Length: 466
Ligand code: ZN
Image (cartoon, rainbow, N blue to C red; front, side, top):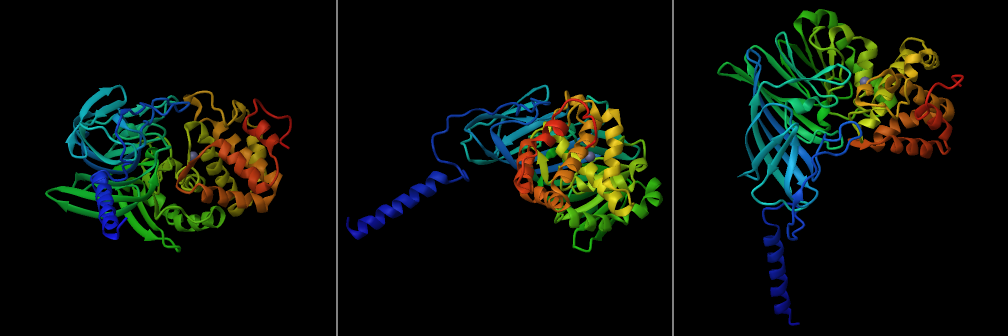
């Protein structure tokens, strides 16, 4: 072929490539033969939670809230990548009223059934395409009562509201792919009456008051499972500091409990430094805490970068526990809710290590105490019988006993290697129980089948602790 012809052909091919990919970032370019994305991800405890057919990259949530009438007016802009050719796809949303939805700027048909919001875009979405969905919605967001009786979702407080999401509460305040396996980055913009503060995850980009309303913009640069997203609106006293290793610390405290909380809040940098020595580098660019008056919330939660505490549970072990979750649970998130013990075992064991390093109580003592408590033997930690049992003592205490048995088996050097190596291996990802047992055996270079059989999966209590 003559040189000129070849050059013309090459230019034509380039042009075809450009035309073929115009407007559809990452599109594989083939003909689109779409099917609806699955309505759930078949989680063993919450089969309808999450949705198939796409992977969310980023949520841009803009929420306008008025505590006087409890009404939320919001827009969610969701950037996602199609993992199949899609004719329609679902988002999870409980309650509220959906106004308008668009996909890549064009109106999409909206259908709702139970907790499922189905959007049918005007044009099918090709596999691999990155697409942008916007949903406007409003109403009074609901509180969700879990199978175990705990309250989550959107909780109204004396002076505002608090959003908590474990395991399904985030469905009450924004449409999304609410399974922990689909993590994404977030921008959360909150507008509230002037005089109130609006706190969320990550770093504070800006806070401005105009026309009697304050708008705060929060940015989570690292991926987050939706159950860890939070919003706290109220008359908080807020403070900003920096840890010795350069992590931003944002704290928000209900003024009625500020005096009682300040000494422990001041210890966050020190505790975080101790945890970094044991667990490896802190995985996020900010940290902090939200402390509520007792009664406004019933339990502490490891919301990403900014755990929430009721004042009566704001003590050193609980602070250590919720901060430890930032590595175990938040950076390495469960593949499904069956892997929940991986969150709670490490967070509980962090308390045992704190007692060992700061209070002269060997972890062995905590292990023996846990062994003696019959409540910890109701079921194996890797197999809670129902959703009602996800937060029961075996998940926390017997989970921590599994870690202690690993430590006894492999020795301290290898155990500490596992403590830091596990969150390093799955940083900002997801992992299952099977990933964990394989990892431990790999690092230890030995079979721990007996530990798994008896302590992790076994029914009932072994005869002796060791
Ligand atoms: Zn926990």
